[in-house]
Amino acid sequence: MSLVISDVTKRFRDVTAVDSLSFTVPEGKMYGFLGPNGAGKTTTMRMILGIIQPDEGSVTWKGRSFGRHRKGLFGYLPEERGLYPKMRLDEHLVFLGQLNGLSRSDARQRTDLWIDRFALGEYRHKRIEELSKGNQQKVQTIGTMLHEPEILILDEPFSGLDPVNTALLKEVLIEHNQAGKTVIFSSHRMDQVEEICEDIALIHKGRLVLNGNLRAIKRSMGRQVLRISLEGNQDFWAKIPGLSLLESRQDYLEFRLSSHVDPNQVLATAMEAGQVTRFELVEPSLDQIFVEKVGEGA
Image 1 (tube, rainbow, N blue to C red):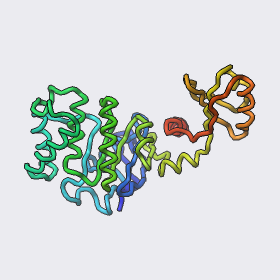
Image 2 (image 1 turned 90 degrees about the horizontal axis):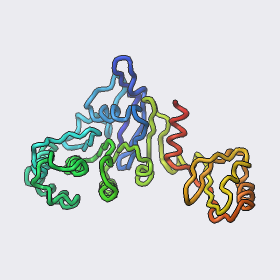
Image 3 (image 1 turned 30 degrees about the vertical axis):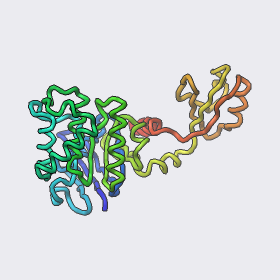
Image 4 (image 1 turned 90 degrees about the vertical axis):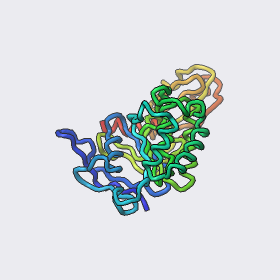
């Protein structure tokens, strides 16, 4: 029981936006769909939902196309927002709930619950055009989830949200997923994906470059990253061939180790340069994996 994207291709005149793309999202997963700008993420999401049709390949959910499933199966949050500016907030949410198969009374009841959850009570009678961008984003996000869809597809859902509301949305998505729902979202914030996603797909120039369980992907990369906190000469590492500085922060230095570098030798050299207060080998972050894999495909 899963979402299967099989050899999907989409061309726009002379541009191939998505090129023979295949991956599978198992039911009930929290799935990160990643790629740089122009990679083909939004085009792929639209093909999954049947908004646009692929030139080649197929997309199925539980063995059938989306069009053959019941109304309200999915919730879709596009990157570009699509609200009616003259409608009142509460009216708009009830309207969206009814579009997705809810009765008016159910839509109103759920609207009241979500307005409270997202702290929008003081704005419930205001027109959408009177709301801040962040509150408009919250309204559209609620509209995506109001009918409790089996599968959520969210394009940059954290865009425009402050840290408090970002944390709230993460909490809501985790709850939705823990209830057995499938969540697929794209984000430019790798830390957000890393925090809540089990599986990822990374595409570049319309092609799949990485796919699978995030923990397994990190393990396969090996512990190639070294973090050192040192009170002393911060340039000690320049003496060590094969040690590349990734990041210099106030609290630590971060390096990539080539395969022939002995971490014990690095530690000995660092101790000669000053007092070492932190020394650890870590798996690469999703940010680092992203940069490395996208760079390979450039």
